[in-house]
Length: 495
Image: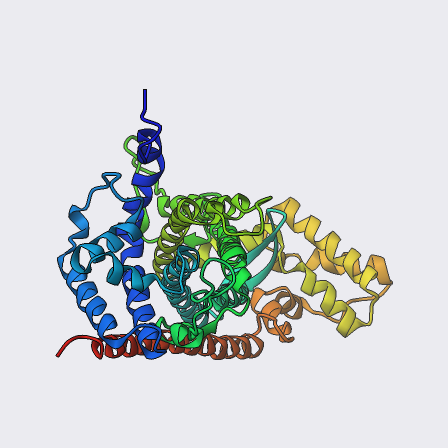
């Protein structure tokens, strides 16, 4: 039987408070320290606290930071959480009256959301940095493989030839858009909740802009109720992360398909291949499977965070705080692993030209250009040209020979359809159905021909540099904020 007068109940302590305390040690001790220091600086600068009181608190905070060994802290239930542990340490050093002055004009409500944003801000910056590295690897690979032929598939079947560079360019475009979504979500993390206090700000003349500056935020979040009630900074962020890894998962699935024995156009290097314990002939590109399930786990973890917010009240609530925040950090972990491994895999893989050529020959993937050539050069309607091309393709597939060996069937089909001889001779026919000609003819905006693809890749390099510059400016602001906070805090320390 538990003692109903003693807090905390053992079950509540073990299932909720103790795990949250461990999470605070791991993730929140640094942000709580910075918030305490910044708030103290602001109170002193605005004359809300006497300078002498601020100096005493500053000295005590510095002493606590130096003495507390987080690795040895164990949750005992003596204090509700990490915040109250620090407050208790302040009381031990200064007494309750002076120690309590630090909490003037603030609440755990605005502190909690500020802490969460600070942690998410750092994690998002690191994730964006990894996304930029993947984009750099993709661009480098696309440039190197700009004329490397591959078979493009639709509905799981060979469709048309393109280049590996052109395929990767499509991946780059999606990743750029996904990174832009993540950058936009990151902007929501740059609005500081401090100063909202419990709900309505404070009767004290606090300086919310100074708090934002000291903590490395762009500006305060304007509406104080929204500071403690709105969770779109959480849902927007995890939705953006989800989309990035949902989309990367589709590319990873292509890599699995392309590296299958029956397709074989993607070669995975030996350093990324595991062997069978019983079948010595097998090359298992297992990292691709790990990428696929890690990307899916990331998507699922993001969904878990967002779905937890469903049908919750528009107010300060635990549903958006400790438990769900920590759960969300696992999404960053699996996301980081995907980006790191995929960057290495993209750089290391290559295209098997022999398998590409064999698959192209077997599937007549260039026959569309035969029809297009007949329209352009012989003045046929597309339906006439399509019928001739279809008959030619059926003949070579039935005979099991490449399309380039189908001139005789082509000539007969052309005469049957038009009543005249084709203008293409055997050499012109072979050129028209070559993969190289297919690519060269598609020099439209966004196409795979060298000029169009080079222009696209140059544009992606520019967009990548813009993303990198934004990320660098954010990191510079964070470094500068740390310097400003440290200098301001030092002014409160006794000589």
